[in-house]
Image (tube, rainbow, N blue to C red; front, side, top):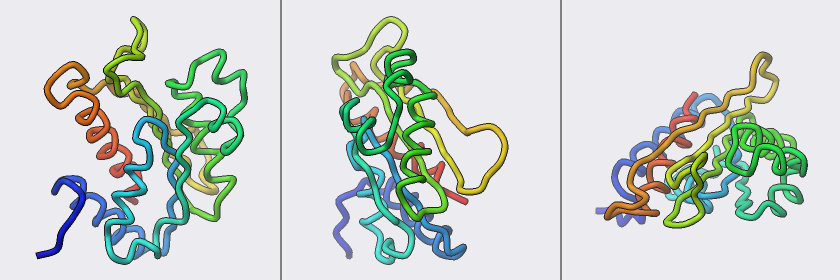
Length: 170
């Protein structure tokens, strides 16, 4: 029996991300805020992940989003860090600063504090950018329950990690 740091659902999905992207010779990059590196950590838990994970950025602060990923200050000031516009800029910045083929970005309010009327605890935004793709950027806003429940912050971060891993499937 192999010891895993991950819950079974995350481990199984991360294994699919590694296997399916490796089969295509596709590299991925992550740009994470509220998940704090959990997505990249889940991928690296899988043997063979070095063939898939090109790098990961943990950009928890707005300053890190600007400095490491090139997110424009006016995006954060106008829409906020928890916005599809910011997530898309994070994903685009991660792709531009890597040799990966696909980037996923996550930003959200994991709680228990930090929420607002317009962006309550559990609000998480995602974006995916594929190198060379044309058309509209892919972005999604989700609301995850659990911020005030028994799972709290951990449950929101778990659900956000699962969603981001799904976005990395080919």
